[in-house]
Amino acid sequence: MSLTNKLKGLKIKTLLLLLSEVKNIHQNYMSNGKIFLHAIELRDINEKILVLIKEINLQGGDKELKDSSLDLIEHLEQWISIWDREKDIRRPNDNDEFIFNGYKKYPKKIENLLIRHSTTLDRLE
Image (cartoon, rainbow, N blue to C red; front, side, top):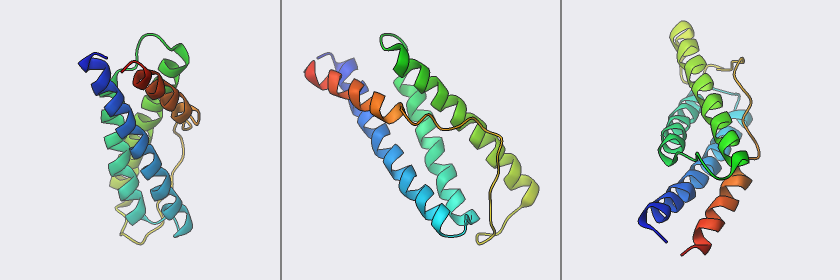
């Protein structure tokens, strides 16, 4: 396996860990009154995911993975933009409810596609 594919495989595994972590944080957010404190955590990890998915650059071969990756980028860019705007408008305290709408839905199949792609890269070793 080339160094490029090995690095891409490691980044995909890191991305999968971040996606799993964001689910846990989102669950805390949902079960604890949707407070701003948890929304801050979501904002931070979503930005890490956005940077990493752009670094990986999943253009090429798998059209379904490419399309889902672009959907994830669009979802995160919209979510972060609205989050930032709403934070500036509302200026919430840590325990204030912080919810908003208007962004593209999360592409639920992205994780399975990333796992499949990662497995394919592992086989090339």
